[in-house]
Amino acid sequence: MGADPVIPPADGPRSAAVLGHPVDHSLSPVLHGAAYRALGLDGWTYERIDCDAEQLPAVVDASPADRVGYSVTMPGKFAALDHATEVSARARIVGSANTLVRRGDGWWADCTDVDGVTGALAAFGDLPAEPTAVVLGVGGTARPVLAGLAEAGATRVVLASRRHNAGPAAACGRVLGLEIHTMLLTDHALPAEVAGADVLINTVPEPGVRDHLQLVSHARRLFDVLYQPWPTAAGAVARDYGIPVVGGDVMLLNQAFGQVELFTGRPAPRAEMAAALTEALGR
Image 1 (cartoon, helix red, strand yellow):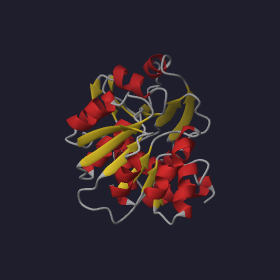
Image 2 (tube, rainbow, N blue to C red):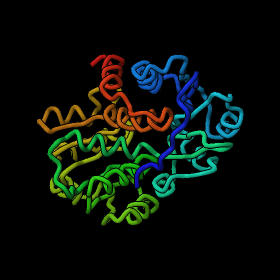
Image 3 (cartoon, rainbow, N blue to C red):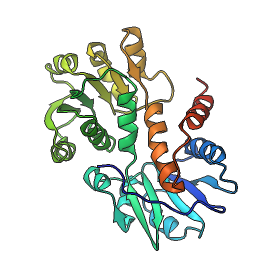
Image 4 (cartoon, helix red, strand yellow):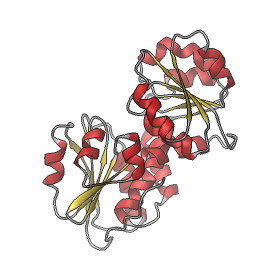
């Protein structure tokens, strides 16, 4: 279910950008800039463009001739998928796109967030071949998380939400071949589900997750898609209990690898990109 091959021309100056609102906090320029320097792509540039979902189509349509692609953050991921002329299989399944790549006269959409999830799961180094998981939250991030779990060989996943609104995420998971169970975050049986799962994945933003931090103490491993400030509220609990934790910075890094390769047609310089992110985060 990986990305279709897209090999843009890499000779001569090119440009790319990240679209989002707000976008000033985005570390994508750090990652892509480091990649272009390491690859010797002189004249390649990468910028931040502040635009919301409604503005995204006009911004993309007005792209300069040298623009090879866009990274897309919220709230534009659904609009990016809708505006694309071609869509990868996995972007269609999860219903959002964080990547647009110029292809001829149109734009090809993909969701490298899935690669970010698989990279984060791999960072634990000891997950079983068919891991089980509990995912907190059923918003826009939950579906790429489910796709990443499916690619990692997961079988059974519990989706926990504040309200009875897990339907779209659950349907996505079942299309991916996962055995999906839904629960409320307040369900008395949820701590036992967390204790029995191989990994707990948090997609609930702060401060909302602070009401459910007691769940983290039951986890075997924690993957928190958040990363700033670090440690996150959930990450701090995991640290105090000696629970292995992987943060959203690992997801950010791994999703950027795929974008760089789609934009440049060359293997991502992973070590240089990782070093640039570590420096930018001050860790």
